[in-house]
Length: 358
Image (cartoon, rainbow, N blue to C red; front, side, top):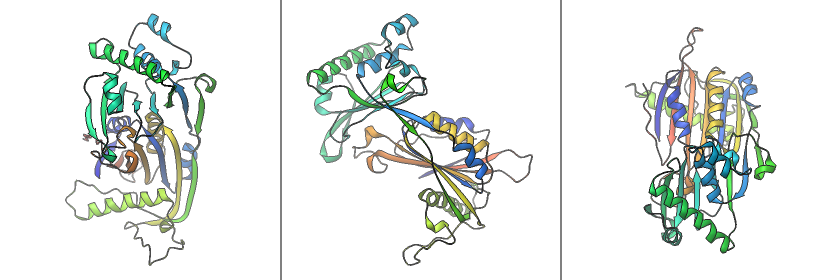
């Protein structure tokens, strides 16, 4: 686990970059302490994604077309794929990650393909990283920048992917099943099945609430590391809805015990959760709302996944390529004129991105 710290608004760009570098999110939890008003602010926030069936070559053409002339865009745009012009688009194939070819497309235009050995040989795209996968199977990881539309590699890749679709059609494999998240405006009839993600809402009354003062992790004080660990333990228990946080909870002392952070008081925990195929844009929206429009200690926990690496043994993380990061924030001081917000961020992931905090 890696822990970072920062101050807002100075380090806002650091948080935004961190979130955008983790494009595939399937669970977002918000924990608020004694702040029903803040809970009311984020409860109306919803998002959606689509389950569609489409050829890969069309997705490739539409995404790369935004780097070409408007005339070409008009020629190749098809109604069911027009939303893919959005820079907030993420797409992920649905399938058996242990046996099938899978690919994903993030909002930066990076296409990642995890291919079986046989597909890699037939596809004809040069390069790729050879990976020893679970079950002693060999996979090849290929990354292509779809913003590159003029190099010989880009043109060859486009041709190979188009041929791949043709072979799949001849073999009766049909269209790709894809999860699509985009902020573009369109109707469900244009693309496929629209899935709306509404938040779940729970409260814990008479709960342990940590003090609204965050430890300075770069300090030489030995107690700060323990205090930091206690805060993230509290956040994790709150996301689980653990009875350990309820002072009236019926917890068997022989099987579970919990010591709250020093200086904790008694209050109410408000827990909001979104579960689905969530975009970085939506995560940023929720995070900014929580940090800028609430007070006291608050926490955010996010589960992300790197589906293309879920079957590899050379990559860390939890089962199915799942990783996590958590954020705890509080005001710098209790002075009314001080609007700085201090935050601590803990990440447990296999594709760690370095953060530079002032």
